[in-house]
Amino acid sequence: ISRDRITRRSGGTALAIKRNILFSPLDMSASIINEYAAGTTIHTKRGTIAIISLYIPPSNDHLNSQLFSLLSKHNKLIIIGDLNAKSKLWHCNTENKRGLHFEQLTNKHDVLVLNNSSPTFPSSNNVLDLSICSSSLRSSFHKFQILPDQISDYKATLTSFKLSIDKLTFEINMRVRFRS
Image (cartoon, rainbow, N blue to C red; front, side, top):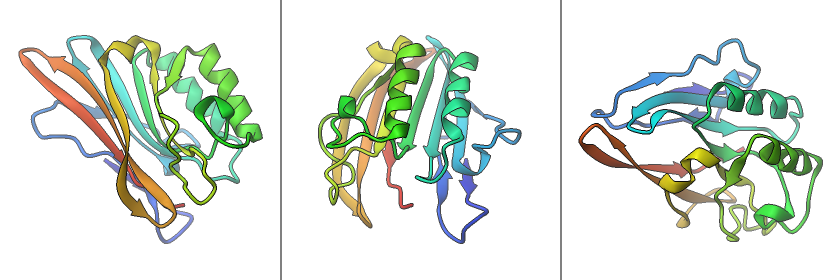
């Protein structure tokens, strides 16, 4: 599932899903995050889980409210992406307005930032690519790590969850490599 950026020649977001996992693409066409998000739902023993790959440009301040309105629609949610939100809570050196707003929204909607202290944007030593999940998925979270791969100025990340579908147990690995 992919969303190419329509306002620029390159970039976008995507999700790759194994063939043996039943999924349904999320319809984001009525949302202002459409160009910047690719989403799906999968069905597990723990219920339906929404997974969204997201890019929020530094200049776009309108996405925070829309992004977290998804939380009211999906009580099991995983969001991964370049959110350009700086907060000391997720180990950034500095804070910005978006980061402070995200702090409030993560508390309000009971979601967790899964990153460790390793910077995803080494040139500024900040964590800009975030992995977030609803607290109901915390027990399925397996690991977060920074990979040695680097695209442009960003480090790739890998976020893993262990989930079960009927008799099949599988691991969801989300690799993020964004270039804004």
